[in-house]
Length: 279
Ligand SMILES: [Mn+2]
Image (tube, rainbow, N blue to C red; front, side, top):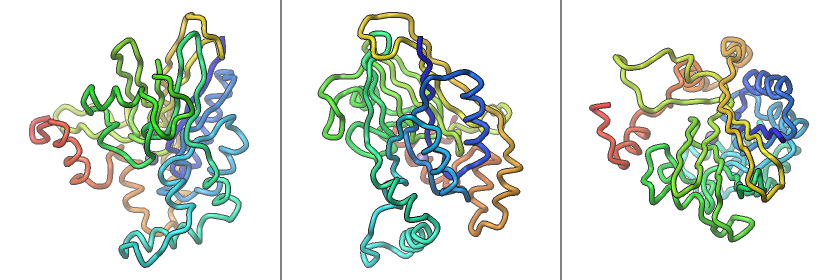
């Protein structure tokens, strides 16, 4: 049996990544695969790129890796986006930018008879949130298994593992398994209610998934899906990041496990038929 650790959405959080890599090592995993979004938000984008390069066997491209490492026509951007692009243009080393802009989109393999496909957000795009949220329709979720322009083969996947939504999920449908591995450096919870919420420590840790099975085997056999939640030193990460400009939103997200923009999350939940005043 082989153990494959799948991590995603590090978002420049060095402490969370280091603690996770130690946890993966302790569990004797055979392979580490990263589904992207290594940079942005946190202070340590370049450091996280280096750690990922050194430790991961396969690394895929996330939306921020793509967006912040490529060239933009600044005249076409609004002021906020322009500031963001210029900031990362300065912050990211040439080496990091070159690495990020050349990452592949998709990875596929067999594990204990299942055809597994991995990507950051969807089989057709890096830039899609509502279609892949935990509350998307069955129809939209089925599209996650289907091949598309950016997948490597034209097979319908048995298992899809993706990141991007920063929360863990497993859905079974049509004899297939859809898994979101959660986020290492920026795990979030969108369903919140002061009267119903458990401890935020259930959310603010680093989340990843381990798949265990026979690698490259087309024969059906036992398969494990292990959802791991690793406690790391958030206060140390925040202390190390305290000289970072514009870090209020980052501090809020890491401490509360809650996305910085309520309106944006509420809009997505409403689109998916959730009554946000009654959750
Ligand atoms: Mn992300």
